[in-house]
Length: 90
Image (cartoon, rainbow, N blue to C red; front, side, top):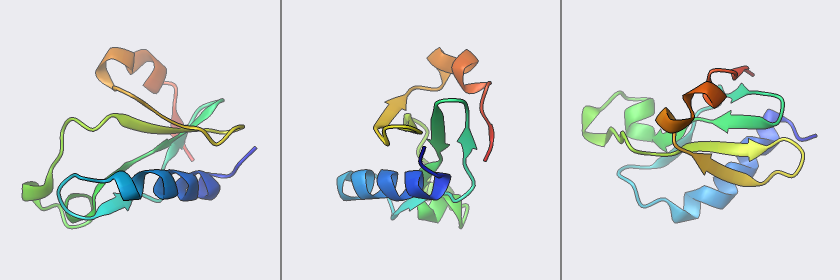
């Protein structure tokens, strides 16, 4: 099983080059987990750290990393709310 830090590294390596959102790609170091996945909070650094509303993105899918395989996947939050309510802080 991979650690949360390894999951962050995997997610960043996979997603940072693809980032076309506003601002600078950023991954929050405080994440969440369930039995199978790490939930990786990500988005524009300028919004997450500086709280600049000009960089707010409301439609990003939720980033997940499989704890066994390291596979990166995404799910929309609202249609899967029951799935996400089972996550706890890492």
